[in-house]
Amino acid sequence: MGNGNARSIWLDYLRSFVTLLVVAHHAALAYPTFAYFDAAHYINSTAPLVDTSRWLGMDRLISFNDIFFMPLMFLISGLFVDRGLRKKGPKAYLTDRFIRLGIPFLIAEVVIIPLAYAPSFYQATQSIHLTTFVSDYIFNQQWPVGPPWFIWLLLAFDGVAVLIFRFNSSFFLRIGNGFANLSKRPAFFGAVIYALVAISLIPLSLWVGQYTWVGKWGPFDFQLNRLLFYLLFFGLGAGLGSTDWQNYLFKQDRFFDKDWKFWVLTSLVCYLLVVFVSDLGANWVKQGRINSTTGYLLYDMVFVASCLASMSACVSFFKQKITRPLGVWTSLSANAYGIYIVHYVFVTWFQFSLLGINLPVVLKFAIVFIGSICLSWLSSSLVRRSPTVARIL
Picture 1: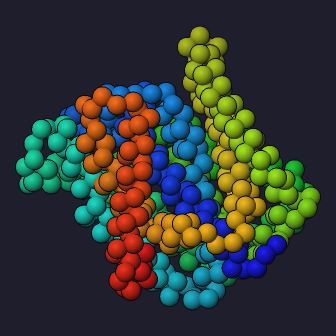
Picture 2: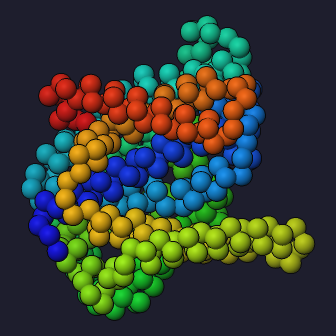
Picture 3: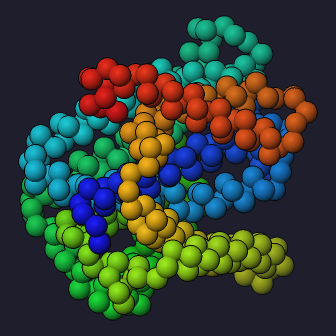
């Protein structure tokens, strides 16, 4: 089983891995076949920068990531909620979360994200006029939120957790104990989790649309159809984290007792099923055999299965393979939050620098991804030399 320190190591490394997926996701967004750039209103584009070089492989990377990496991030974040509330108390906990989340969010939205969108403004207008950019950014583009949407939404979820804890301090513990009892029947446990996730995602997605953002909320924008979806994973994490969840989920004859290779294979099969159902459903809608709502319902059902399978693969791999600290991963883990905050500006400027250059898409992606990781990592390491900054990041 390992000691408590070993457990935190593999979770920290898993969170770092998800951060790498986030950077890869944003690095790939300039190169999928479905990309488009709206010069009149670049916030409506599929990405801040769109290259003329395209490749279907980028479509697959983006769609595969999109299915599971942010739910997994919310799940991991939720694991530490109950422990933090009990250790610090609601007021101190929320104050700490505001410092750790709120301050970086404000800095990112005022400085980093505008810098990340500067190349978009130039691509759209061929102008470098600062005041025009700022005015357009705030009023026409409605102050794009960028990747920090996760940070402010996580802070909002923390606020919800504090309210729940104040009214019922055993709420998350009861959820955790319920999971412990369900885990004795792995198939039923999986079915219950699938049902909860499906309910959190599918009805709202069918109502408001599959990839619908609120819009007009400026730096507080978020993906509306996934609000309950993300909140559920945060809550699941809070419930699990209130108990010794690793001792019951990873035991023999429990949900995660299988080798990580089983879950990786399952995740790949489920994703192929997503691709198949997506294409089949689109064809059936075109042929009039089903309506669009039914098509999206079928897609969402396999989407949930793929999400849970991929999350299980990541959790199983890191739990089973990480048994001791690893130098590079330890440094990455320490700087993962900083990388998340600053990476977008490096991603967009690398993408901008490669526009019009005749290189294979894979090579462009590699340059953007590796370059952004290295510069973000370096930036985080440098600013974290300050003890004050290190306490926040």
